[in-house]
Image 1: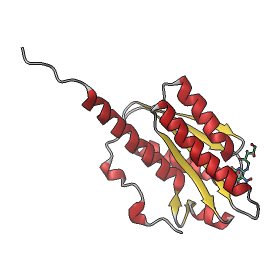
Image 2 (image 1 turned 45 degrees about the vertical axis):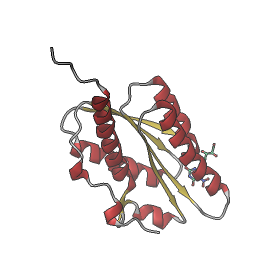
Image 3 (image 1 turned 120 degrees about the horizontal axis):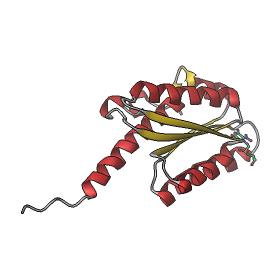
Amino acid sequence: MTTKISERPDPSTIPPLRHARIAIVVSRFHAAITDKLLSGAKDCLKQHGAGKIDVSVFRCPGAFELPQVANKLATAGGWDAIICLGAVIRGETPHFEYVSSQAAEGIQQAALRHGVPVIFGVLTTDNELQAQERAGGRLGNKGWDAAIAAMEMISLFNALRRKRRPRARKP
Ligand code: INI
């Protein structure tokens, strides 16, 4: 199934970031693909950040390890968002199901446990061509989309934080 253009996040609706700290965790498995996802994410943050965006990159062996690193970073604190990038390609083994489902579930758990946006920028495709098409090819770059999602979530969380503050009483 291909992602429709209309389902992609719309960057024009997101205020430009100022002073955000973003961690990108990228897996080395299928590095030819994940390096392109990383470039897409970094390009996007560079283009959309109005102010100083502090981006740190952490590499791990495979997509299975992404949640472990994201959880460690979220536990340490200080990040406005954590972007996880990886590529799980089906091939012919059931390994695909384990790796992709654990990556997705673990990433969501890290986000829910720590209340920080943790973004799922993991390609799960049947073959390498499909992955290439989504890593800077004809169907865009999931790394770029993940960075947009991170910016949207940072902006939303900031707005929610402001809403929570009690209004000052009139004297
Ligand atoms: N890791 C990936 O990131 N993508 C894959 O396609 C993949 N496959 O197919 O096996 C993969 N496996 C490695 C896995 O993520 C772990 O690094 C490994 O099992 C060690 O825990």
